[in-house]
Amino acid sequence: MRHATRGEVDPFIVMDVMEAARKAEAAGRHIIHMEVGQPGTGAPAAAKTKLIAEMADPLGYTVGLGLPELRVRIARHYADWYGVDLDPARVVVTSGASGAFLLAFSALFDNGERVGLGTPCYPSYRQILKAVGLTPVDIPTTFAQRFQPLPDDVAAHDLAGLIVASPANPTGTMLDEGALRALANACAAQDAALISDEIYHGIDYDMDPVTALQVTDDVYVVNSFSKYFSMTGWRVGWMVVPDDHVRRVERLAQNMFICAPHAAQRLALHAMDCTAELEANKAVYAANRALMMDGLKAAGLDRFAPPDGAFYVYVDVSEYTDDALAFAAEILEQAGVAVTPGLDFDAARGQHWLRFSYARGTDDIREGLDCLATFMKGRSA
Picture 1 (cartoon, rainbow, N blue to C red):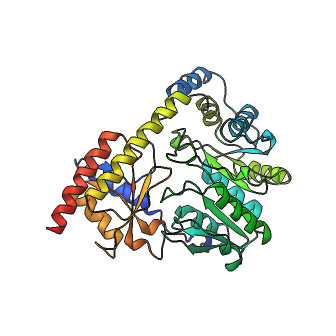
Picture 2 (cartoon, rainbow, N blue to C red):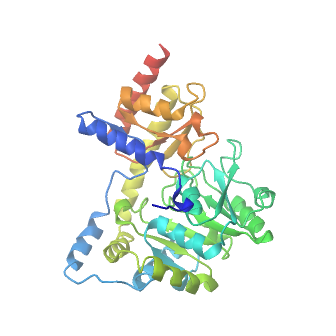
């Protein structure tokens, strides 16, 4: 049967690692999961209790832009966290952040246009862009610039748009207000769209996150209930768009998705008021972060930028391997620890990098680090 070139996207390697780990577990092995960016906790308990009480009602379609009360609550979230006065009419509830990216790319760009990605970056940006007929442009970043793109990159690469992430996946680095403003100004000067991925907001440590809405309204801001709100499997996110783009995005959302899952939207609404439980989860990530940085250094894996946020450490392993995929397979086989090769995030340089997630429970992280230390010691013996 014939097929379209838009379907010829690269695999999401971390999902392949998850499958290899699953097979090892099915064979009876104990595996420590440091490969996937999924909180070890589930949705907040109080939110689930409220949703269960609502399940007796038919949960039919919602309007395309999402439950009105959830959009109002998200707008209040921006006032509470950032001091931003946001009109709820600009909020679009989406089928996960992935749905938001599909809507954003469809609304902003015409076929073939060039959209910049500071590499290393979340791999699905590139693959979704390819699938909708756009041209992803990798912009290599450096340790010195904390793996974030620079304002000059917008004009230098002739971009129609730029995607930034803060905190970033896989590095955990963040943009401060000055850096984010400079990128927004550079995009405005080139008539390039700015898309700000903020799905790890709330999971920060030594500095407060800045939303792009603090520096410009000419931006698409993407967020999700998957990370801070611990709702990965519920597949609900949101996007904030400029006033004059709301109807354009609404028409796309109506036709592509009808609406985000109704039950997930209701759970998300309740989860936004579960601050105590969510902050307790964040305290676990903070403890895990300290353990991870110390444990990796003790194992000889000490070449990384300390993560400002999210729950990842991106480690340069070039002194040990030229093949991160094989190295990750070796770690899984011999140490029983699943980690993600950098090729997911940077096709050009990722063979020298591994990403370690510390989203799971602290006991798991401690055990995994002990296994890694034993593995690295045996490897150098």
